[in-house]
Length: 419
Image (cartoon, rainbow, N blue to C red):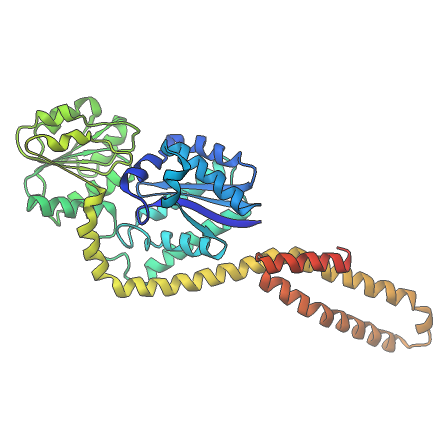
């Protein structure tokens, strides 16, 4: 059994491919089911965010599992294997924990140190638990990744300043507009990302908007978000979106949907210049809007300048976080090796003790002349000999557990001692 990860992320794939392969919450159950049905997978967790879609799995056969997972992702993206494969990143064994721990710490995010990713990883594990596709191996991996991510943030300043897509988006919009003072802002969505954007707008670090409208398919969710500051935030349903967009200076789409939510026709009626930021994956604003007079359309790819600034500010903190993550990976792998070898070590020691007791009992008649004290001394001596004989095999099994060498040693121990 081995642990692998197979995925597509913003560091290795174009935005169009990321958009195609993204799995919205509503489709996660279906995709998890398709993955769990693959012959070579015994555990599976799906992580799908706006810039990352990755599958973590416990597998029997490496190549068969990678091919199967890649096929599922290709089907999701509506493309063939040949087109997807160059953008796929695969991690194996140690590389899996090193990668996931870095993701949890925000070191693999477009905005270094961003905080949303911890919640996304936690939700991915919860979803796999709900669908019963995860077992003890991946559960422990994900829990330790979450712990490592929290530690990296607590012990370094990696999360200082612009630490989320929400902050980065507001910062980028303010930079483009010059200031948000008096701006009429529309936020589409009421989930985690939209909430972060509204909170960032209300902080007023980049200017105080004249008004904020939250438009969402589920109106009660929009009302709950507007309750953060009812005097400045208004809630509406998506049926009222066209009217408020026509008078907006800034529109930010942070809604999860599998189709266009804001059509070009709605923006064509805008009364003046309007900046539109589409954070949807797949996109939720009609790309044709970019050609409309007075409309400036930005997406996730335009956050690059904000990211570059954040990278310069946190270079030393990133290095410090990497040291912490390296420690956490070593600790996790050490615990995993000990955990993986434990049943066989116990079985080996039990077998040796059985042989010792059987041989001692077989020769008990010849030991009848010994006093009770002498007999106990012989007992102690034989127990000590068995412990010394078992020591080196125990160490070797624990240190190599989970590796090819470990599998070979385990097979040899079982054959030699009849386990």
